Amino acid sequence: MKYSYKNTLHACYTGYFTQAIVNNLAPLFFVIFQNRFGLSFEEVGRLILINFVVQIAADIFALKFMDSFGYRKAAVLAHFLCALGLVLLAVLPNVFPTPYVGIMVAVVFYACGGGLLEVLVSPIVNALPGEQKDSAMSLLHSFYCWGQVSVVVVTTLLLGILGHDYWPLIPLMWAFIPIYNLFRFLKVPLAPALPDDARVPLRKLFQSKFFVIALLMMLCAGACELTMSQWSSLFAEKGLHLPKVLGDLLGPCLFAVFMGIGRTIYGFLGSKINLKKALFLSSALCILCYLTTVFAPWPLLSLMGCAFCGLSVSLMWPGTFSLGAERFPGGGTAMFGMLAVFGDIGCSLGPWLTGFISDMAKQHKLPILTQLIAAPGMNPDEIGLKTGLFTALLFPVVMTLAVLTFRKKKQQNRKSS
Image (tube, rainbow, N blue to C red):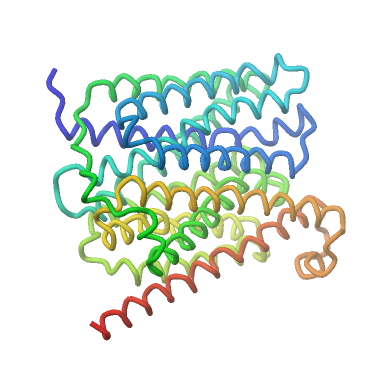
């Protein structure tokens, strides 16, 4: 069989699907981990932190060695590490004397793979022949969303059918996808890399105020997206007192559906949409969604805040990638890698901060915040989780200001030109 660039694109789609698996599977087990292994809010939040700190390390490794190591070898290695980490997630917690240590080891392995995928896939797609790069980037990132939807729906249904005692079977099942895609990347063609004289060095990138603002936007984009998606399952069950199946399907599942819809629409209609205006409106909507999630008087309305937050964040990550690629067409691996580093910083900082603040509020150590959040009838878990999510409102607010600054600086540059 002769493979074409279309097969390469499909392999990249599956790569982002794989990244959705490793980023979103463990949070669906958080309640099981808490009940079975006695983990605190901060400890499950720390798992998210470890995941993305390791991904940051993988991003930095890719920045330094990717061009010499080769994209094909790195893609194969990334999928191998993702599959290995998923297998270890099923095995190690039940064989290690301290289950939490076993979970952390598994997280480290699949996070290495996820971090490499994040740096690899976008520049591979960006280098493929064709125009409408921003639309292609958004459509690529939509497969992360559809992967997240699949993970939430399939995992939730399997937990309902098999029961919580058989949860280790589920990571083993998901491990088949990165194994399958590993063999695809052994065969698909890859576009030639940029020559050395066409690449923009990192030092020059950091001299641009546009790039610095784009890094801040990526940090906020990662925090806005991952805080809601990673905590919505636990929030629905312990904060809104909903059954796990219902909470997962109406919380993180609908979040991913709306995020996928937003990215798919932009993937097909991107040429007709002003990206910077769309990013500003997305950031403003994200603020509204976080406020609705925390302060809505009815659980269903609160869940709708979670769900529509997926639409609000849908353009943040791929949109910032597209702005960077448009502004610095020779950025290559260095640019995508550095943007990914700051995105992963946000992905780790946002969920961990939410867990930390939730534990503090639950222990009555933040009286000013808890007085603002607390209402009659709320238990400590509900107060803690809502306080943590309210604190995460910081990120969409900063994102809105960063987008405004980015637009203002570009307008000033046009006038001066």
